[in-house]
Image 1 (cartoon, rainbow, N blue to C red):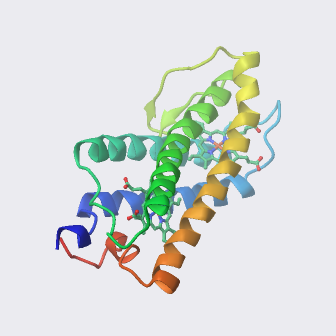
Image 2 (cartoon, rainbow, N blue to C red):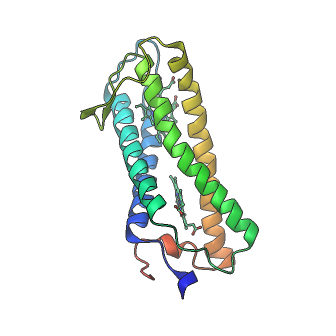
Image 3 (cartoon, protein in one colour):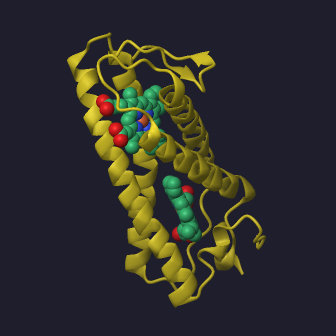
Length: 181
Ligand code: HEM
Ligand code: HEM
């Protein structure tokens, strides 16, 4: 049945890869040393920049894929307001996943740090060393990371609601081992 289709293999792979990278990124962010004027981009801080730029790459590729490969239609049993709310939360998740790395990258540039894609491919400087604007982006970056956590919490609660209370196929449509297409 058309309405019961799963997400495609690429969409599933991208979803769970981003989930894993974001989990690692928060673990690194919460254990790296506090970043101050004299901090150098070494150790866990370097890992934060590397994993963050990798997230940016994967999210850009994922979005390009999504724009050319629409998601399967939602289950007909899901009420209209839940579909609209899910659409809004998914849009906000993509927007924050895209904005967060740029905010961090801008802040890193203003600290005079070189940013490279996974520490290997040099990326351009977004703001001059010492830029006050770039510096201010650091607080916005950290605040947006908190908003991402809240959205992911809502998103997971919704997935569990569908699985445990509504008992429909919403979660299974995204699981790697489910293959209804
Ligand atoms: C989705 C990707 C990212 C997430 C979830 C994330 C998350 C975080 C979090 C939670 C903090 C606050 C750490 C703390 O003080 O407790 C932080 C700080 C920071 N992040 Fe990221 N980050 C991401 C991507 C990046 C990228 C790509 C860069 C740079 C290339 C970056 C550079 C920084 C910098 C410089 C700080 C310190 C900001 C300041 O205190 O002024 N982040 N990040
Ligand atoms: C970093 C964590 C996560 C992020 C950023 C995230 C992001 C997203 C996004 C953007 C979509 C929309 C896909 C599209 O239609 O293009 C989505 C769908 C979905 N996600 Fe997540 N997700 C995360 C974690 C999880 C977890 C832990 C679960 C399960 C408990 C989950 C279950 C689902 C399901 C079931 C869908 C399909 C929803 C539907 O059919 O309407 N996600 N996710």
